[in-house]
Amino acid sequence: MKYSFLDVGFTYTSLKEELDAAYHHVMDSGMYIGGDAVSAFESEFAAYCGADYSVGVGNGLEALILALRAMEIGDGDEVIVPANTFIATWLAASQAGATPVPVDADPVTMNIDIALIEAAITERTKAIMPVHLYGQPVKAEPLRQLAEKYDLKIIEDAAQAHGARDNNLRTGKLGHVAGFSFYPGKNLGAFGDGGGVVTDDAELADRIRLLGNYGSKVKYQHDEVGGNSRLDPMQAAMLSVKLRKLDEWNARRGEIASVYQEVLAETPGLTLPVLAEGVESSWHLFVVRNDDRQGLHQALLEQGVPTAMHYPIANHHSGAFRNEFGDQSYPVTEEICRTCLSLPIGPHLSLDQAGEIARIIDQVARERTKL
Image (cartoon, rainbow, N blue to C red):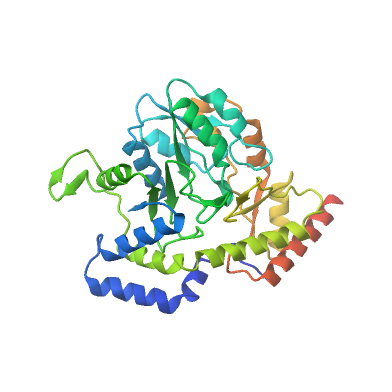
């Protein structure tokens, strides 16, 4: 039997009637930029996160860039970022005009190593941008203590962590502002690009909205040099439908993660993900580590189990940042990039299928240790 790593189509077929109705509502409205569908989703998503405001934008990268710009973080400033993350986090700081300052990963959680952040802070540091990588929130309280001590902003990169919690606070409430991605493969994904910014700061929300709308609040009056980054109403309408299923789908991801943790607990050669105390992951990804990652990937593929690699090239080794950071060393990040392997996870899988996948992985891994 062949399994799917990801099945975005499942989110349509399982909600077809409601999604089709949302499509027709937008089409019949004649409002194809902004409008009720966008404002409704913004209100719903803010409430879901427990925040006061949500602003729909074009994508997750622009959510972070706009947050930085709205906070007037740019030229000459530094932003603390994880070394181990998708490149968008670094790009956001760079495209806002600031300098990303990488901090190595925690070898257990694979998130930013909070113990290393203070040493990276300088007089130019203006913000810490933690990434809730793979869906696991970064612990908020020690970040808040650093932010208060050094007068820094906390900008959450929550692109993979819709609905995740730290001590019962959802992502979006753990810092000053949070950027979300609604890319189709996310836990809360649109059927195209989309993003959102969540905050409790009314002034900040207004400025983000202004910057994403050509620097304009009133048509033809442009108060700042803004851009065009707005959430499409069709995507907003679809997201409103899917938001109502998010907790249920996240729960399924958590159940699948529990199956993997149980069946693979003694599997030789596999390092399983570990959650920090008090956090609830959204389990966007289930990332294991294996010294022969490529060999295991190929062997599992031959057994009908697809896996993926998030992210095999460290950002400081990428062409985009090699000139600036290539001579630096982030050993934990480099080891994660060399060994990481993501297993299939998502609401498209049943628990029986998850069990079958886990047993195949265990068997293949055991056989490979004998080679």
